[in-house]
Length: 442
Image (cartoon, rainbow, N blue to C red; front, side, top):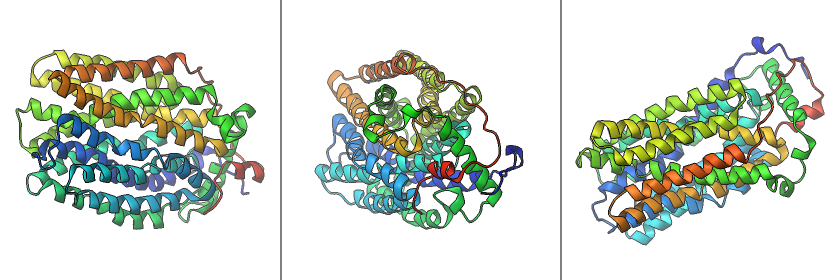
């Protein structure tokens, strides 16, 4: 292997090639969660949906989301993250188009379930891809820049969905927004590589340095963190992370999927375009919070507090938003809540990579995402059902705050503080060590 130059001399093309292509790809996936939240208030009884039915339609996506988490993670690690995501991208694009053609409530539920099934494997597969390109000292920032596609998708697509609803039926909105993933699959295939050594656009020096740094990260992990898949997922820290993610995601999606409905109420039933534009504002604030929190996390190495503090702020703003009056104060609190529930993403997903070796972290991340995202079913449905039952959204959002509180308790008391990562020394490492840090396959 070629001697790696000092880090300062290594170009950073991976930030330009890997992150934007992956971010746009997942923006198109997240669109299917964002557009349904904008569409549901404007379906005007086409499928005769109550608030509970709308919550179920938003949440049933996450029941399908569970099934491919671990299989896709293992395929990405053992075979190819690039090919795994490509197959799933084509499948979910076709499913999204079909979801606009349904005629009954049952068909709509089924379409949402199938869409979640195919999209479910994308998240862990991309996390495996990033783990092959970004050392641990950069991982929270890399994760956050990629995951910035979540609020960015809402910033761009909520106004677009609102404008489209003012000019076309909700069916055409879903059909037309299912087409871009089929086109982006071509860009993905010709741009993304599974690891540095296989990329056409990277220099040998940069590839050597990256694989050296990744191998050093693996060597620094305790031997107990490796082992079998079963041993990895039974670790106490992994079980805690599953709990944290479940309770956080319950609050996260319960808030996100009902946000347009809350804004529609604040605007006194404004037009779809107006609601879409105002919905984008909290997500723009969330985007800045994600990137800033991830940079702080990488600088300090304190992922626990980078998760816990924003969620604690989210609890306070979520509750205050239910008792204050006036459109402007409530809008400000919606912005604070959005920033709080999005900010932990980058630091949270950097934690498994610090605890587990590469060969088993795929299964652990797939399991965390699979079980944690069941909260994506629970949150929207709880808000809808409690709103129908009590006649007010106050009860539903108070319950969501309680779920976030459990997540804060778990992350602060259930996870041990991690030592700061040593800065890896530049230079070559044995080929065997380097190979252990990268996935096999093409």
